[in-house]
Image (cartoon, rainbow, N blue to C red; front, side):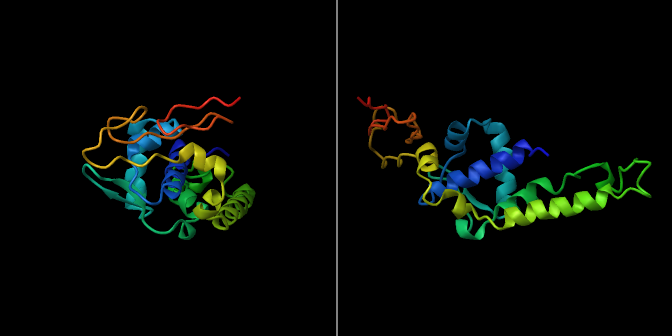
Length: 183
């Protein structure tokens, strides 16, 4: 079994929003931090908004944020929303099924039970549990706050007024976004 890129990006975007829960985050920030295509991410964000996982706001101070607390979003909900529309195998799609074994095959029942066990396991894990007290994830996904209007962005800050904080392993970031040397 392999997850689709859409599901993977949806989870990355939601974790990014959970780590940066005190503000709207922008698509570009997520794309940079998660090594994702902005175009593909835009489609995923649109789906997340349509599924009420995130709220979006247009404009200069816009972006996206979680539509509800991370404790109320389970991994299973996200996976079902993004993976369920795709049939797991040919026999799961009544319109496209051309399998000659359908009338006597027991594999479909086994696969259905396995999928339910898979989703049940994911239903037991919340977005909050993936992010809470996870210092490494916070280091990877936390962003420096945007400067107030009228303040010139300092070194390392993007023109839009923010910069992902991505410290190399064991190398703390300095306030300007550069990495400090550890001796």
